[in-house]
Amino acid sequence: MRGKRYKQTLPLALLCFMNILGFMLLALIRDNFFEGIKTITTGVIFVSLLVICYCLIKLFKMGDPFLLLPVTALLSVGLLMLTRINEAVGKKQMMWFFISVAVYFVSFFIYKSIKKRDRLFILYAVVSVGLFLATLIFGRTVNGAKNWIYIGSQGVQPSEFIRLLFVFALSALLSKKPDGRFISTEWKKSLFIMLYVYVNLGFLVIQREWGIAVLFFLIYFSLYFVFGRHRILLAANSVIVALGCFAGYKVLYHIETRVAMWLDPFSDPSGRGYQIVQSLIAIASGGFTGEGLGNGSPYYVPLVESDFIFSGICEEFGILGGIGVILLYFIFVYRGFKIALSVPDSFDKKVALGLSAMFSFQIFIILGGVIKLIPLTGITLPFISYGGSSLVTSFMALGILQAISVKEGDSIE
Image (cartoon, rainbow, N blue to C red; front, side, top):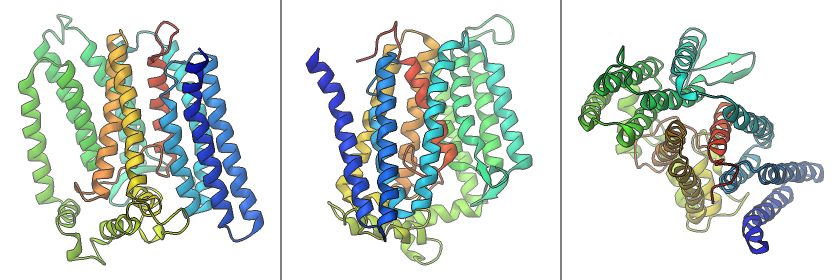
């Protein structure tokens, strides 16, 4: 028993030690003594909150104790980089972290308390459509996409919340058995699911949220591949989406530009290809071991606090540090898939798989764009990039996964 506890607490101890060293190093490179004290205080508060969260999970037996550990490691890397790049942004991220932790525990208890979650498709669909319509009516265009609603000076990205509702709605539809009325056969159920998916994709295309649209389709494709019965529909959907992407490439200038800069960003390094060129330079300048925390120049990369934070990590922590981040994501997604395989409830199984697929595809899309593996899209890196909507919804999904991992009072090992 003592050995088991040691194995479970050792990663947390190492994580706390890493944070203490990181924030002390940041304090040493501050301009004056008082700024350094503020940085150390931020680190102490952050580490204390991590320990409290882990202790609460163990104390109240809140499911998989290893689900939060890779997330907290990713949060640590993100907060260290954000504080190093811009201390004001780091403080804002710290505030969002406090809010996200509260949302994490609230999501856990709400999900566990709601019964018959698989029968609430109408609720999921209505709220999603309402958020889409609110974005179209009251939204503001940022970076070419109409995907933000501002309440005073604070912006909210509704599509971040719609993603969770999309997973719930698909899980509810896939769990529903033909009732002999409207959805009388498996074919009709599959076609109705397709209709729901393409309504969501249509709203996203109107908002010019092509990256999120691709993410939605990949979530649908994954869930239907595992739980659907008609493989021919997967082939048909692949053709439809391929034709849609080709039409978007031919018709929309900004998509054509992104594809062109993906193929050859150095053809216009100071103009259209500036973002990806600076990203590649930052990654290359870090080498294998990096220039060290505080020694790089990540602020030359546009949007380094959000879309391109991985480039800043690679510049200061090196390619090895970037690989470490990717491995942490692998561990997190692996735990999510393990939860999906372990839980007996059909709806919970689909939700766990959908959320795990959502995270995995989101990570691939943004990392692939930053390293020029695929065309760039404006999707944030979960738990690392700056952004209130992204961090809150990521913790909401994490709380739901945590709730699903609870199995007859025992945690999934």
